[in-house]
Image (cartoon, rainbow, N blue to C red; front, top):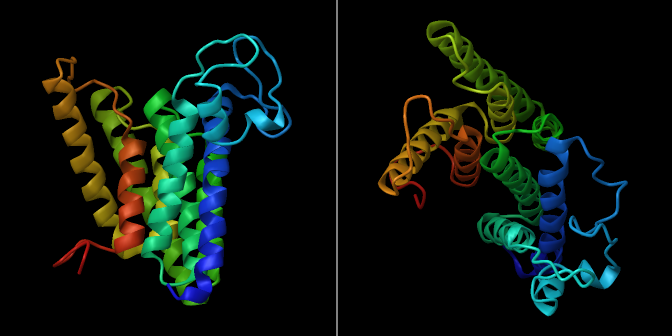
Length: 257
């Protein structure tokens, strides 16, 4: 990225931890049906509304030693980790992108995937507002590149949704139980809207490999894993969607080639 684009990159990296804090709020509140923007941040234990100086990403947590200033309860690692992860996404986007606009768009895409991945890992829920936003934002980003790009992304979104929807319906009819949630097809549609049709096989390959690796690691750790065990496939789809968007379809020399 040229030197002239550095100011945008710096501001993006500064904003990233604040975005991560907001994403953490989304992940916690959306599945519960709670308001995200209207309600002010508060301590879940004592209900005390947090002041501005308690909302500085990472810094406030470190200064307070991870505890509420009111009741002293341990606040946990969730928000600091979300803030660090959001910074990592932005840094990765800045490092990979050729233009400032690409860095901004990749960051937006990665942040949305991050919130969906964490939500699915925590609760096996892919919130509808986030998947719909992912689709809409991907198509809007494609429109910036012209009608041909928009047509490809619309096709990819339809294909991504259709493939996983057929898998989910077929599994349910054959086995008589849910094997894939209905949020996964929508997530795949959103990923297709960002990556294009040619990258969809790469997304599925990475997601399947990551899911298998996670199941094997869980089994090695002594956790019961069976054919009916629930796995957060959306989390693995998000990983595949992120890598496919940054590096394209798997081929010779991928991801460096």
